[in-house]
Length: 539
Ligand code: OGA
Ligand code: FE2
Image (tube, rainbow, N blue to C red; front, side):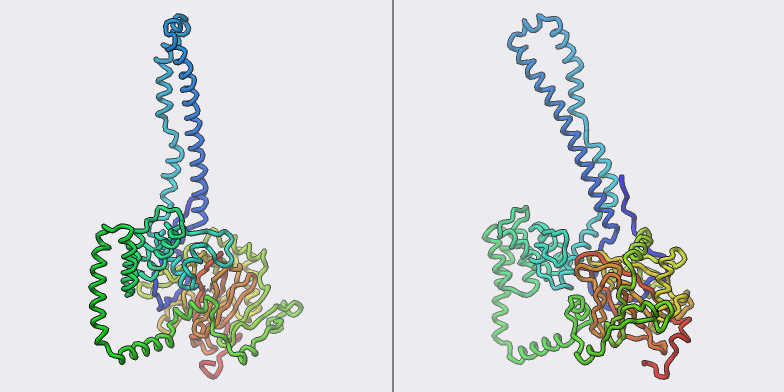
């Protein structure tokens, strides 16, 4: 047996991420085990299943040969029994066959060839995802659908940007997704997915999914969302397929009753009510909650920066403020944003360095954690879904060289920084809006380090991402797209030490592909002469 799926270990590293985003709207507890190990597990099982088929086939082959041989023999024997038995060898062989050979054949027929496969299955099953994991994966899919505004048909036909291995959802799969949404009382997605299942069946897809069941869920979801006439229409359709359907007949009567009542009530409703309704709708549109802003930025629908501001963004060769290591070979630097100032360094980490960092991190990757302000402990959270590991400069000259590079180019002392954190986001992996720095109400966050607050963040992009996975700043409307070999840098604190709330940021869920980043959190201590205070607090 090959590698087993390792159980999740909660990182005990105290330097893990600390801040809880207030916008914990949706629960996303989903499977983040070693998914690639599961692929190997499945491959193993297929091999073992094929071995079983071979064994079963060879057993049947033996039995068939025996049957054919005996078929011929008994044919001849029954035609002339006396003549046949007149030969002493035939008489002896008949005895032998009946006394031992048929018994052996019986054993062969009874022989269980499935041992190997079944025991393999039993061992591997303990690493299989469970119902909760499957629900989680479904919820992640629905979540991606929302964030990236994907219509159900596109998703079901697998038409996503940048996919390498196209994959379809069957009507049965769509039904399953709809059911999961239904059990979450998420009638919006129930409707979308039940409708998709129905559509695929109407188009002639052969499936075990049953239209009556689908219509039953669908009409209920539609009713729950207040579209009574559509619910009636769907229930009628259900009754055409199954006129005796008890619940549907009951619902039909109920719907008709409600509709009659509504008609009555509508007559007496006034116009001013309509007006009030319209006004609240307008208000709703004006106020964009952070979640919506975050999702818009993730889709690349960022509010565009004014041309006037854009004109002040430049690119340049940067020598680290006359750093001897960069005077002859300055690096490419681009302004990504003005306020807060976000700069991107290009070709700042080589493919070889990336490979080394990834290889060092891989065996240590474990589910990233956050600081729970209530218990003070590190826990996993649905709003931070990624795997991470920490690398010290002492363990590899490559890591040490990278640390020095960050020091040279930021002008900040890295000896007080946290270790290099490597993070890997799979599909659906994300980190919802958060601050990297500790707020005033969390004075103890970095107490153990004794190096003050997180003054700045340096973030390497160690992969391209086929779709999704941007780093976005919802307060200011900036989206930074991952590009392999580049890095972004920003200050989290003003020179006064005051936190800059405009640096609130998030890692958008990966839609297609895999995202690798590594980051360095620089701290206040050691920067006293490198980045001195200014006279004004928020400068
Ligand atoms: C972080 C973070 C952004 C990203 O890890 O703190 O904000 O794009 N990451 O991965
Ligand atoms: Fe962050």
